[in-house]
Length: 184
Image (cartoon, rainbow, N blue to C red; front, side, top):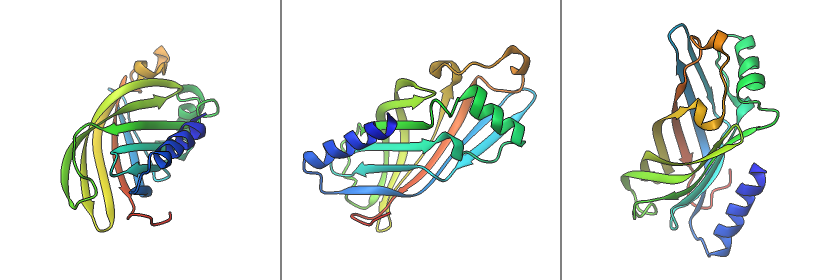
C-alpha cells in the first residue's frame, strides 16, 4: 500500500510537469525513547523519497526493519513484532508539501514547515513538522527534530514495561535529496 502511495505521488508530480525532482541520496532517521528505567535508541540509513523543489511537494518512506542500534537483539525483536508490527506495517511514510513559499531551487538556508500525512503502525495522522532546509550544489538537505506520541499511532505498551518504553519518542531526520536529475 505504501509503495502504491509513493508511486501515485510520483506519477502525479510527473503529470503536473515537475521539472526539479530530487531523490534521497543519503538519509539518517533516528529515534530515542527516554523512559524512567531505560533509554532506547535506533537509527536507519535506508529511507527513500522524492522532493519536487518547484512544487514544494515530497514523499519519504523508511522500512521499519532497517532500524538498528537497540540495546539488545531481543529488544529489537519486541520492537518489530510487538510494538510496530513491522510484518503488517513494513514502512513509515510522510508525504505532503512545504507550507512556506520558498524557492528550494535557489541556494540558501530556509526554515520551513512540512505539512502532510505521517503514517506509523498503519495509522495516518496529519502533522506539521518544522524543518531546516539547505539548498546547495550537492542537493537539498532537510533536517528536523520532532516528537511522536505512541498513542497517536495505536502503539500499545504493556503495563509490565511502561517504565522502560517512553510514551513519546524523539525523532531526528537528516535527508539529502541529491542534485537535480542525478540517479540514486
